[in-house]
Length: 560
Image (tube, rainbow, N blue to C red):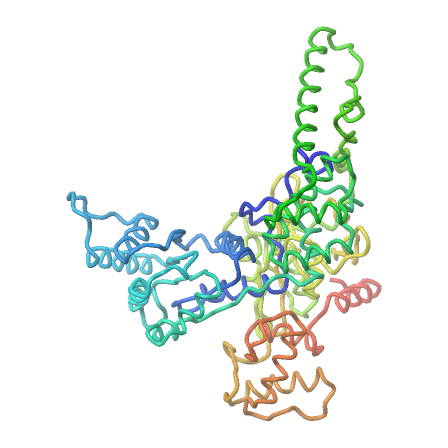
């Protein structure tokens, strides 16, 4: 296939939903955080909207992968159903047994069965999550029936968490007066926007990297990615279609990289415009056919001549007057040497202790012997969280995403025997990650570290003495004063914008900060905004400050 021609291991721009290829732009990262927060909160509705092709379904798949094992998930992909059919689908997804008397269960029977299941699930300490994709197609009657499902609750939380995913018109529908009760029960909502021009370039590089792009490869010039962004309007699905067609065209013409001419041809095919010139698709198919025939002929020759035969001729350079020459694919990267220095690879407990030490916390938790048990083995947050420090688990797909976190990160690894391990990540220097071990700072080759990193990480942050925060205009109290003071520290002001009341001026300052950090600019000082704020205001530990600390303490022989 064409991707092998470029030294790739798989098609990089398939439109099939694959969480491995999820590019965590700041907006996608924030959207995922909203979804996880909504599931972890007291229940009710969670709303995710976005234009066609912006990555909603892929984001949803990533969410499902991060849900705890104690969560039972029902997924409805075809919401064009009436109330009874929808409830029957939910019951089937959850494995709820229904009476088999030959008659179709009525709405009451389905509702009662679901309610019993929710109560039993809650008693077992399990969560129940219902995900409805393409929810903009739900009728008003069905939406009202879904709302009624959330009436079952305990004193602390709803027993059913419902995630509605749909196009922007879903948000407009929920704002209708007849659905105001449902709209008021939405505990978390996020509108997923298309990628910016810079993010489009990073998105293309990310997908090529995941597909196995050899080091130093550059198929898409920066100027061309800006044109791709303009033509696709930053919609990931359109980006995938354009890039896929361009690579196929480059393969068919024997080129090593794409150009503007290939983009114009891809635009005509993807956008449905007529092309009066010859298409490169037949050329690509011809090249594939020739390669297959050449391979078959070589196999036949090998069978006749035995093992002493000379190497096969390069099919790429074979004389084919009607077909452009195709250079050989780039060789696969050589495997890492077994003797490589991996002193930076830490045991789970040592990794937790080193991270805690950066924050002045002494931790002496031993490694857990059994996988899946809390604490440092499975989830170090059980050991790391303490007074004034909150622990967060995250995930990423690129090194750039890790750098953007700016904090010291404890990476989850799997060693050569697939056992749990850790790396204390403090930034990137060239082709190596700057990490800390018991002796100080070390350099871990990104190629080797990437082979062992699972994509998950943990970090600590200096959480101010506030409650479950979601402050907005009109709120008052000590929490408002703390947020206002953080902004005063950030801006170098001698006095905060307000003392105790969340004013219009503070709300506008929050929006400005959110836009600068790629967060949802709603003016609400929530958890994500607060995390970014304490770091920007100098009230938290950055990767750079952590590196300096390790260096100084190692020189003084007081590290860790």
